Amino acid sequence: MSELWDGLREALRLIATGDRELFAIAGRTLLVSGTATALAMFVGVPLGYLLGRARFPARTLILATVSTGMGMPPVVAGLVIWLLLVRSGPFGGLELIYTKQAMIIAQFVIATPLVIAFTAASIQALPPRLPDLLRVLGAGRLRTLWLLSREAHLGLLAAVMAGFGAVVSEVGASLAVGGNLAGDTRVLTTAIVTETSRADTERAIAYGLVLLAMAFAIVAVLTVVQQRQPR
Amino acid sequence: MDARLEELSFAYGERTVLDVPSLDFALGRVTALLGPNGSGKSTLLRLLAALEQPQAGRVLIGGEDARMARSSVAYAFQEAVFVSGSLRANLDLALRLRGLAAPERESRLAEAAEACGVAELLERPASRLSGGEAQRANLARTLALRAPLTLLDEPLAGFDEPGRQTLLEELPALLRRFATTTIVVTHDRDEALRLADDVVVLRAGRVSAAGSKRAVFAAPPDPDTAAFLGYTLLRTDLGLVGVAPGALRPGPGDFTVELCVEEVIDLVTKVELVGTVAGQRLAVSVDRSLPAPGDRVTLGAPASATVQFSTRSRR
Image (tube, helix red, strand yellow):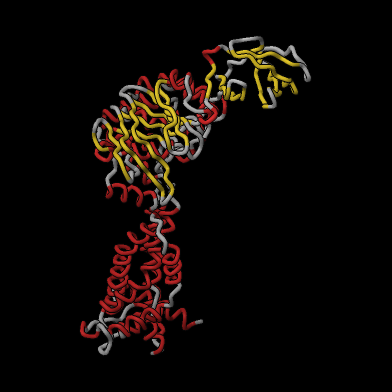
């Protein structure tokens, strides 16, 4: 028990004194997971919109595949990306393995099914006639998309939170394709694993606290935006 | 603004929903699109609003392709749909999407809301409107646009009976004030008569009758259309005869039949006699109840209220 308190005290000291390594790793985590989530939104929202609105023969099969993807273990995603990016793999020539870009790709693969599924569900929950109404009133395609997104904002922000939450907390994929290289591809989750294995509990707890605080701050901001009543 | 359909054909997959060689909606007139469920009435409105594209033919609004004339059309769906926010925000959004400046929006919004009886509800979230309130709000949003062509899909659906009656009385004046050319979808004959100048009867995606309401109701072209318009169809020695709704009265007429009364139903303000005429079941409303079950009653109608069909005209 005293180890836990000592760890907490040391963790707070590291945070309060602005420990350079701690904040570098936190910044890198934010960069990798933030970029992966943004890319997942960029690709997943239009695809989710399409799956939510359009009716075509393979739609149900695609939705089932996407839903399966939501439950994909990160380490499996990491393994697949590793096989693709490793030097002997089909994209080995790109020399992306053990880089932040490889981690972003792996996290993108993890977050995208979540974003697609949440978006599709939120679009499907809108009144079916709403897109027709907006078209009849004179809204162009982009304006219609914007107004529908505003109507579906609860679901879309839930998609961001689910996507970011999934990638910022995963460790398997980041380890597999990032390699946990100190000062380069080490992020908070892989750093926690490293420090725990080194028995440096104080640092491990400090990284854990920062990870929790970061995730909470981002999700809290998104929740405030989500729960704001539109005029 | 007038509207015209030319050689129009529309299908969902293999199923042809509309097949209209030619149809005109005259400028400044109110036309009722009358037909049973599934006859293609709402699809026709969607084509006019360019929400659907025909497989063949053209939809013209003011001589222009319907896709180019969206800003000339206001369309109230049967189910009122709103974005989140207050009713005021919803009405304002509709006017904003038509590119109107703020002062113009405010005056149009207030005027339409007042006229449609929803001024008190403007600050209420649209999601909290009752069925009748939502329908009135839907109408207010459509009329506020003051579009050259107004499309109303079953505007009286979703009301309780007193609410429906009230709006039915108010609607003609509202249309005169806010709309020019109007097309109203309904499956109710009385609504069509009260609201419209012209009537188009659709049956199974085809126009079975079109013209002024007097002309259409006076001379239905076939027995099915006549039956839909409320005519009583009777097989007689003369052939199949249609008698206009309410035209059969006790006593002899140019066209006379004898009803064997089986049941007398007291409807308080009137009495309904149910029985058979030459083996065909018939119900007739009369002002007072003279006969009793088992009696035979002579019923007559003026020649002007009857239509005779050839036996082959029934489809």
